[in-house]
Image 1 (cartoon, helix red, strand yellow):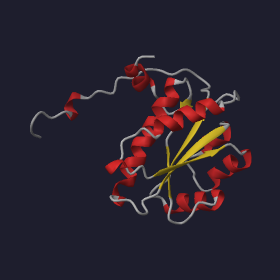
Image 2 (cartoon, one colour):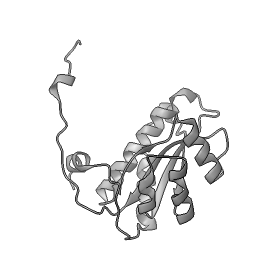
Image 3 (cartoon, one colour):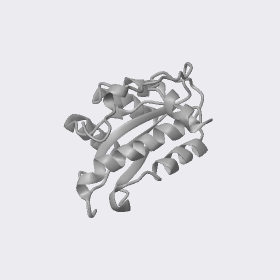
Image 4 (cartoon, helix red, strand yellow):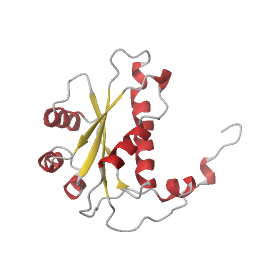
Length: 169
């Protein structure tokens, strides 16, 4: 698939089939996520692969916008770890870049995803810390359910020339 098609056809997918996502595909999307740029190459991220049905089903109890995890077989929680980093304040941008890479890698494989925001919502972060035994110094950042979409991807052109400024505002 051409890169522009990967990007323009990536959509938030909230309904999945019961077809399994292979360990190899999970490995690919996480490897691609880890190629994201980060401030000073500090790579302040951790990835938790969630496959246990019981854990997936508990997530909507503290994350009201993550009900789709009840329809997927696997999700990835991206976490930020600013501790000991030279530029600790940049971890949200770094984790955002990793999340975008993961979304695009999944789309390239034909998988559907949706970015369910966690950080900076204290309740959502606390819920993930408790459910997955995440240390207090680690920030649950974004939950990304993965699965085979129950439907088709469609390309969309979101280009808006009114938002482009040349040389000055």
